[in-house]
Length: 240
Image (cartoon, rainbow, N blue to C red; front, top):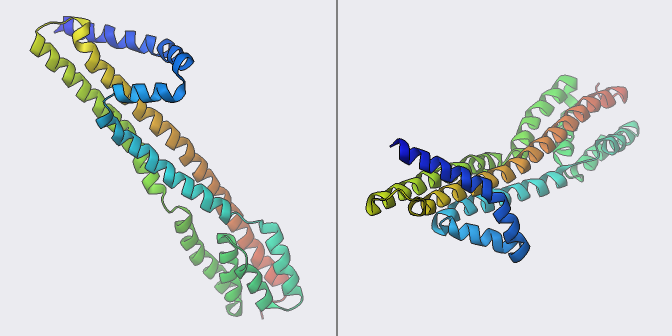
């Protein structure tokens, strides 16, 4: 058993040490896409397909969120200036129309605040807080699926590792030999599935962190604009 463990450890270290040089040589001669295709097939394409599906679906959700958040980004300073101009002219309905015609969660929250102007500052703040929670939920829509794919991708890779090791032991049992050639194939499958699973998770994690930071930025601007709106309404004697 010790001999078998030592043999497997030596093989894994050798494959890891040679992976960088082999991939570099392959890239120089075949091109990046061909290298990925080759290692994808060698890692058992039937199993690697699940990892690829996780990556594709995760990227689809990421792209959808990034596009939506970019559309939702609003120039809050300019929006507040236009609201202030209308309120100075005594045109509350005009200020509401400015918010209604502006895209993004910030404009929607400010619209709800202006709509509650008749109830005083307390009613405005209550409307802003309530509708702000709704907009937060819309901004975070789909993040749970991205998190799921980030978790599943490496799990599938590790499962491939276990399956590859089982295949290696099956070959040893069938052949009755501990030579490297017998177990190398199974260990290679194990390492490749792990690598692809980790790569998929890393890519999705980068996009996930970018999306979360984007949401935080929008929420901070929304909160600042909401506080400024109450001040603007008070300075223009909207509360009576």
